[in-house]
Length: 110
Image (cartoon, rainbow, N blue to C red):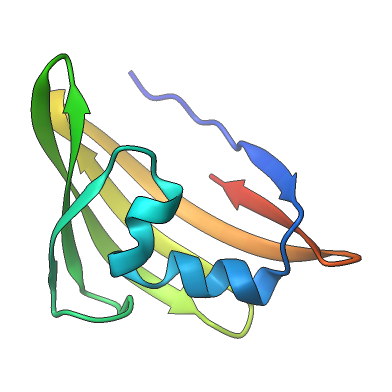
């Protein structure tokens, strides 16, 4: 079964500040509650083709999931990735940051 959703929210932070948080796997733990970075290959900030392994607690166990980074546009501030979760769940994600004025940003996950 396929579900298609497009959650969005406005945050009180400038797009450039959020971008720096999103493109650094070492900082994922700051915005993904309970998540731990296991590895990033190659290491460093997000690059197309990069494979990221993360883990998170679930029912007294640590489960692993991965992000495979696709295209990135630092000028327009968007990232394409494929997230693979336990139980066969695959999420094709397009994350965009859009300045919303007065130091705010609209963040979309679709």
